[in-house]
Structure formats: structure tokens, C-alpha cells
Image (cartoon, rainbow, N blue to C red; front, side):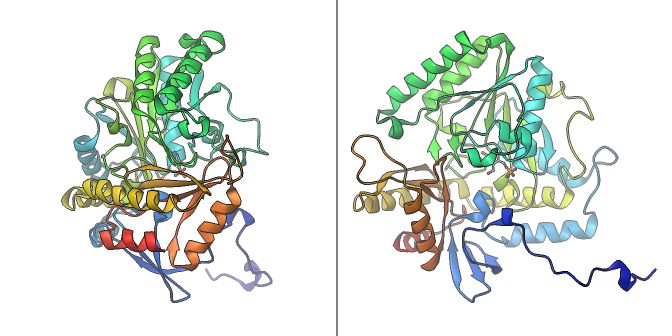
Length: 424
Ligand code: PLP
């Protein structure tokens, strides 16, 4: 059959939707490791990694080879009909890096879908409706994930009603309160207890959901004692403890999982995506076999979840992270970055706070005339983000008020590249 001229619209050209607004004018020609070559012929040091996704750097040769080889075998097989080898291999590999006890894995395509899978599982397993989230949390943009997101109104304004049963409790944001971390944690735990006593009955609460480091909420590490307080309350009330490791997981913070900075705590459900496959779309939730058995076939999933090429890339990613010692590299290079930024922060009143864990680093910009309470300065953060681009360094902004510049280099970033990034 030939396509007739009538069937093709030759009168129209299409343009990108306004929702595809980009932060820089850069169009990628090709990329390798920490570097992007633009179609403008310029080389950009990439401290954005596609928002924390290209963990092993752009186009790592072993990830590329694994994906290419998989394409010659099978690209897509739907798991409700036939299983494929890469998903079995990935599940085995994940077993080796997941916290003990989380021995059952379910796959989806994106972070938001995995968040939804975790919430569905928690509600099915507990037969309770409520989910408690923490101020500044970001969990995605699908309607359910946006309902759980409190990192800024732009993620949900205009398309309400959102999912019901979501309640927000304060996050221990020590810098904003002007307190020490301990005082901020005490306050946030007291507020959570009060919420459970006054408004959201524990025996109606399915889960706590939190990130080990707030991502879009401003690159705020969750204090270990707060995570431990949540774990203790979850155990006391039969509430499930869900950790969204979508951005902080997979080595980014200098431990394999972000929550591993907090003693030996284990979540009931762990959500991972982003760095899992170095850029191929795949996500997963992990839980105990007993808990995961509460989600019956058909209650979770979608057509493309656990795609064969993405799974093969994820297997290669785990191998590269292990063989190249990238978790340790993230820790050491993260310290170098933080130390350099602290030195820069000392020279500018507009930088209120510099913080981070491993290669997840945020710089909070504030108005310098604010005496006591830090007043967010989104314009300063945007100006810095644009200026670094002009100097050949790609950065991103985040935070509910948009006043944090975040730096998320690839886990393969070198000492010289961090030094160059600091200079730029
Ligand atoms: N959870 C966290 C912590 C994230 O940072 C993100 C994305 O930035 C998501 C969930 C949503 O993931 P996705 O954009 O793949 O749907």
C-alpha cells in the first residue's frame, strides 16, 4: 500500500509544545562521559546528567554495547506473556545491591509510575487510605504522583482535583528555620506525632513516603535521625515506610542507596529509577516477597515496563558502577565539590547555604538584605544557571521557590572535571 498525498499533511509544520520549555539554548550533537558537544560546536561540561539519570556518564561504552547487543536479540517482550533474559539477570543483580529483606522486584518505565506502584501496593497491603508525605517532597508529575508532591505549586496547579488521602507533615529544613539539625528534627517529629494524634489516624494510614535527599525540593539531605524516627513510628503503628530513591539512589550520594547514610535502617518499599540504566527508561520498586504478594497480577504495570533493552542497559550499569568503583568516586568527588562550593559561598552574601551528599549538591540563593529569615532569590539562581551555561557548564535550578542551583555530575566525573566546574 502506498501513502497517498491526501493522507499526508503537507500544509503544516509542527513546533515543540510550550510545556517543553528548556533551561538552556543547547541542542546536543553528541555526548561522552561528562561532556556534551552542542550543535553550536561548543563543548559543555554537564553537571545535570539529564536530571540525575546518566549515572555512568553519557554513552558509556559498556552500556552502549549491552543495549546494541540486546537490540539484535529482542527489543520488547511483554512480561504477562513471555519473560526475557535481561529482566531475570537484572533482578538477580539488584538482589546483590538491595537492602536485605527487599527480595522481590517489580518494574515500570519512569519514577512516577514506580511511585504509583508503591502507593497502590501500600494501600492494597494495608487496606488503609492515607499517605503521609513531607513538605518539599517531589514524587513525579502523573496525577497521583503530583498529588504526593509538595515541592511547588507548578507541579499540580490547574489540574485538580488531585488524589485524595494525601497529608503533608513538615520536613526538618534546618537552614530555613534558622535552627540546628537536631532542633529541626525534633520539631518535625513532634508535628508528625501531632498530625497522627489529631487529624490522620495511624490505623487509617498506609504509608510514610519520603526521599533520602529532597530533590526538586531543594537538594536537602534528610537527617538520619528523622528517617530513624519515621521508621520507629511506622513500626509502632503498622504503617509502611516507603523511600523514594529515584534521584538519590544508585550511588549518587556516595552510598549505594541514599538512606544508607542513616545507620542500618531498611524501608518496606524502595523506589528506584533515573540512574538505574544510565539513561534508558526503566524503574523498579523492591519489597519483601510477602508484601509484594499483596499486589496481584493485573493490579500493577503497563505495556512497556521492564523493557528488554533498558534492562540490559541496567545490568551493564550495575556492572560498571561496581567495576569502576563509582560509589566511592561519588563520595570523594562530592566532597571535593562541596568543599570548593563552600569556599565560593564565603565570598558571596547571596549564597545562603551550600549542602549535599555525594554528587547531589545544592546552592541556595537568598536576598542579601534579609536580616533574619532567608528570603528566596529565584532570579539570582536563574542568572547563575544561565551564566554557567555561557561559561560552558550546564547546571539546573530547583527548590519550591526556584532559588537553588543544583549540580548533579555523572558518577564517573574526574577530579579535573570537578575543578573545572568550580572554576566555571
Ligand atoms: N521521585 C523523585 C525523587 C524524582 O526526583 C523524580 C523525578 O525527578 C520522580 C520521582 C519522578 O520520576 P519521573 O520523572 O521519571 O517520572
